[in-house]
Each structure stands twice: as C-alpha cells, then as structure tokens.
Amino acid sequence: MPERRLRAILFDKDGTLTDFRASWLAKYVGAAEELARRAGAGPELAAELLALAGFDARDGRFAPASPLLWATSETIAACWRHHPRLWRMREVEAVVRTHLADDRRYPPKPVGDLEGLFRRLAARGYLLGLATMDRAESARLLAERFGFAGHLAFIAGADSGCGHKPEPGMVHAFCHRLGLDPEAVLVVGDSVADLEMARSAGCGAAVAVRTGATPESDLRARADALLSDVLSLEAWLAAQE
Image (cartoon, rainbow, N blue to C red):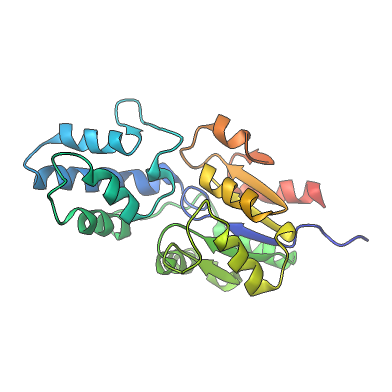
C-alpha cells in the first residue's frame, strides 16, 4: 500500500478543542467590564471596548479580523488601550492577562471526548501537537485536564519563541521536532489565522471547524474541508486514506 500522505496533525486549542464562545467570550466580557469599572464607567464602555476589538455585543457576532478570535492578551490589551478612556490606564494589560488566564473562574468547555479522539488518532499512527496563541503552559494544563497530554509530541504557545499566527513558525517548529516535511502535516483550526498559518507553511492540508466564532464563509474560502467539530475529523481522515 502507498504511504499515507498526512502523517501528523497540529491542532489549534481554543475554538477547536474547546467551544470558543462557551470558554472564552465570558473572559473577554469580564475583562472589558473590569476595565470599564476602573475607568469609572459602566456597561456602555465595556460594550465599546468589545466593539473596538471586533465583537458586537448586540448581535453576538465577531468581525472576521477580530483579534479576540486569535490574538495574544498583549495584542488585545494594546487594542483596548487605544480607547480614549483607557490610554492613560497603566493596568490594562494586567487586567486582560488576569482574566484570560483564569480557568477557574472561566472553565474551558471541551467539544467532546478529547482523550478518546487523541488516543484513537495516536493509535492510527498520527503524530499530534498543539499550536495556540495562548501560553504554552495553558495548553499543557488543558491537555492534562482533559486527559490527552500523553498523546502529544509537541506544544507551542505564543510565548514559545516560534512566532505568532498566521506566521508559519509554529508549523516549522513542529516539523523540525518530528523530522517531517510540512506536506505531511494537517492543521486543524477555527480561525483564518490558523488556516493562513497552514498555507504559509506549505502544509499538506488545512481543516476548519465550526466550534469557533469565525464566519463560515471566511473559513470555507481557505480550508480544504469545513467540519462541524473536531470529533468529525476521524471520518474525514479515513476518507483521505
């Protein structure tokens, strides 16, 4: 039989392995509300901050380029600091970082049985990794929390020195660690940044999932496949073999 084309899978974390709105929207709202209180304002300022970062609280929609969908806490804080009510506030970044890192107040919600998924993929011979714009330690803790850390050969975060999405650095670091060419790697993500990272790195395939908040039309235009969630990946892979 011919050798399988795709040999490794690099997963995004938030919005891919966890439900983005259930896991992260409350963090962003909480951070915006605290900043508004510190500025001596109310819910109106919090809504303005969310809108500044590309989220419309009235209809619950994210703009395709919203940094809330993919960026680091530093990038989000820098965005909010542009608001005239916050540009002199020194603690903006600390407030954002505290809320985004608080998995006790805002527990992550997995999309399903992640341990079973990763166990079965590893048993089929796939090499597995995580690439997130969160901290690498947060990715490691999530993998331990949901029981699939032992199946991972690679974890990279925004603080790992591999660059930031949509740059190709995380994919290249994954390939270097495992001795693979990018053509053997499948990237699975929920954002335009994930898919553009895969394309810029020359990956063999890029698959998008609907458990994030990016409009489906933006994902469909860039992905080889658009799946309902990451648990549908096994069937898609079987069809490619």
